[in-house]
Every structure is written in C-alpha cells, then in structure tokens.
Length: 331
Image 1 (tube, rainbow, N blue to C red):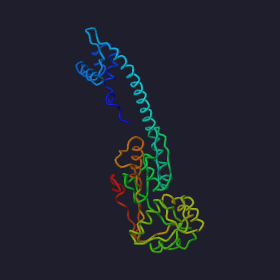
Image 2: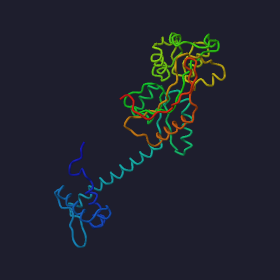
Image 3: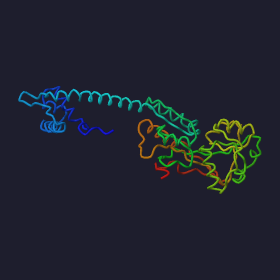
Image 4: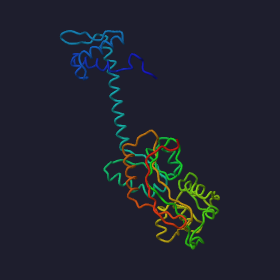
C-alpha cells in the first residue's frame, strides 16, 4: 500500500523531532548536516504540507506549537519503528553474510567441494555452509528459485536465467567389472556403446546428459534405454563391480576403484568425453560475500589442477583451454 502523500517523506518530521529535543532550529540543522536557511525551508514545507503551524520562532530559540508537539509525538513512534526496522535489516544482512547456501551435482559435491569448503574455512570467513548434493537439473532449479546462492553443475545445457562460469574440466570414463568382456578389449566403438544397456544415473544427471549429447553430436547416435537407473554413484559402482554391466562415470568418481583394480576402464575410440564443470548463479546478480569467495576458490583450484588427457581415435593430447570467461547462457 503506498504511503499517504503527507507522510511519504519523513525527513521533515525527523528535523521537527530534533528541534523539539534541542530547542533550536540552528542546532537541529547542524545535527542533520544542513544549513539553518535550508532547515527553515524544510520546516515551512512541512507546515504547508500538513496545513498547521509547527514551530514558534523567537530570538531565544524555537519552540513547538501545540500542533507541533502533537505531530512530534506521533512522529516519534514512526522514528522508533524506523530504528527497529534498520536494526532488524542489519541483523539480517549479518546473518546472510555468515551463511552460504550451495547446491552441487553429485560429482562436484562428493569429490571437489570438500576441498573448496575447507579452503573457504581456512580463509577465516567463519561462514556456515548449507550444501545440497543433487543432480545438475535440480541444482539449476535451486539457483533459479533463489533456494541457494550458487550452484555447480556438469550438464552441457543450462536453463535461461542463469549466469555461468567455467571452473574446471572433468573426463567421463566407461568402466566395467574385471570379468566383463570389454575389459580384455583394446577399445569399443561408439555404436556398440550406444547399443549396450548401461547402469546409468537418473534423468537430470549432468553425467547422463553430457554422455547422451556427446553420442548425438559426435557420432549421430541415440543410446538404448538403461539397464538400471540409480541416483547414487556409489550404487552404480557397486552394480558394475558385481557384473551388472558397463557404466559411464566421472573419472573423479572411479579413480580409487581403477587404482585398486575393482573396476576397469574401457577406451571408446572416436568419442571425446571431456566436459566442463560450471558454476551457476542468477543472471543479473553479482556474486558477493561467501559465494564470490567460493567461486574464486573453485576457479583457482581448476587452474592448479592437471589438464585432463583426452583420447580420440587413439591419439592422446592435452586440452589447451580449461577456463572460459563468464557469460550468460540460454539467452
């Protein structure tokens, strides 16, 4: 509801309260940082606005009229409420500055964010972090609705309304159990991979979205329906190790299993499975506070990380570019 015109600007009432407390228009003007002539103009404007005389001026100072005293009493209640409102907003800002809400896709949440959050805490921020580990689609939605301050995704498509920045790269790896027939082969063609039912992440997963788009864009292939769908990377690795079938997972997620030999990597000839990891936040909003600090930590970590190796048609090379400039997506 719009404020009534006569009270929409409180500066005159605030000056009137100072005159009542100090007994002088000149001292009230000095308290408000304005000249005495400017204070006189402001008081005359207020009197015209209200239609009643508020101040009696004399060589001995300024006193409030009966109407002025009544108006000052009513204005004091508003001034007290304004002070309380300002104190509440200040407390809210302090609370927000000490609290960071983050959503991240499973790969980032499980294998990268712990180190980033440790660096954030070691920086002396004292921030309390609330982390939601969900898939990339759910992360993007949480940022769009304002449920979180910043998100990290792996999917190649980002909804309209989000701003993105590349914070690193990752490589997807096809893995199988040591007993699987692919474990003894030098490589598998994309067509055979697309025609094989895989143990897969659920729809909305960045890993799944990137893999399916890579098949379409690079090989013109659509994959067959999954053998099984899990929302947990740990469950997928367990199913693959038990012999259920192949899976496509982040190299970060399977590094320990590949080192231990419980899973085996499969080379896919002619398919580039390197992908970007993205920070996302609301378009038109500048990152600040702990969210900006976390974004900076993620970016620095990506610069220090070894560049991913990619194998396409048996040729191994290093990606030359790991970071891109911040740009709006989906517009």
